[in-house]
Length: 180
Image (cartoon, rainbow, N blue to C red; front, side, top):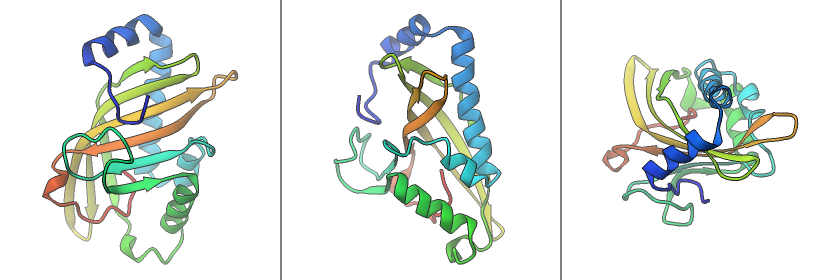
């Protein structure tokens, strides 16, 4: 399934209930919360280690309905693993002028809906609110996040794809030099 392409919500929820145990659901939910904590705590190297280098895709689409594909129009962000490494390097080292001073962020995630796509792949969807404070100004972002996650034989979870669908993105988006 393409990143951001969502099945019918009722069927999606039914599949989650039929294909996951509560402890398994809890493990994935905790993983998403840890990812958010890493970003808010500026632990970017640890955050980067959550990604599968071979398949990583981080996507923030632009305005215009609810795009279901990275090939439809222009993206605010469309990074593979190499671009994520560059983004993390800039955030961790001096010289990222657009992040001086560094943004302070706090995000809240809704309880995710998680669906097994294959034996080792899952899609998780959640809503989020993110507050960014920088230069005595607070900016609020909100939207939906869709993840494609993998779990290997050792039970290690990795992020394959993450798409952040901002609401109100057609109103204009400020400086997105931090990671959503």
